[in-house]
Amino acid sequence: AVSVRVFTKKPTELSQTARLCMADMQAMGTEWLRAPHTLNKVTGHAMTTLRSGNVILTGGEADGACSNAVCVFSPVDSEWTPGPAMLMPRTRHAQHLLPTGGILVCGGIDGTNPLNTAEVYDPDTAEWTAVELMSVARSGHRLSTLADGRVLATGGIGKEPLVQAEIFDPLSGAWENAAPLLEALSDHVQVTEGDGRVLVAGISGGAPKAARYTPHDDAWEAVNIAATAFGEALTLEHSAQSVLHDGRVLITGGSAGEEGTNVAAICDASRGEWIAVPKIGRKRWLHGQATLLDGRVLIVGGMINGQPGKTAMAWQGPGGVDGAQDGGGADGAPPAYPV
Image (cartoon, rainbow, N blue to C red):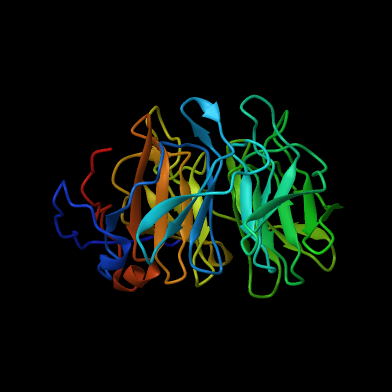
């Protein structure tokens, strides 16, 4: 059975016109607070926190066109600035911090067709470098770092939902095939566990599916997951997610219904547990999300109540979960701020 905990404490009311800088945010785990807007309205972008603590936002769709634009957020200065453009436009791509400190960006859509191209950003030189093509074009896939520093890519959608998995070697810049998933997955949860295995969980054929990958054996094994872990209020399609410092995964938003959802939850997939956390304000999907070095979580842009937006929200992180109580209703949602 899946255990769900929900908040019962209501957040403090904030002024509709308040715009709080990241540096001034209160340490409150029971509400999302406004953060500085990004430079442009954007959807389908990707975000990653660099070793410096800055957050890099890449690509997406802006002004109706697929973009290769990059912008960087400084939590210290509480502002966004333009960054060096990627080598090619892409949206719905995957992005991941490498052990070298660089950023791997791969796959996505060029506006029409899925991509198998990949490139790596070096924050020391502020330059992008093309690396070997992926074995299959894909979007909506997931990446995670293995114990040896290589990066596992799984699933996504190409011409059809994919089971293919492959591994990127940041030292050689090359990809090699890995054992395929047991079920085709996209927009799924993926996290490297403490023992080095990788757990994936998602929806396939309308049913929840989960599996665990053992790199040493290059093999997947099925994992039982209760159907109630994916309730009607929580969707994975077009959601955003990031790994928290405690190894769990925070999922926000998604494209449930015509305007999406504002539901957020922490997935402790290894325990089969979903923990409800405060809603993210307005309904949002195809947005970006990153966990900051201090544990806060930043979400930016996306389709907000059905329209492209550039607003940002931040949450203190799992510190608020310590105050959660078992049972109760879906309480604790912050006010819905205007776009």
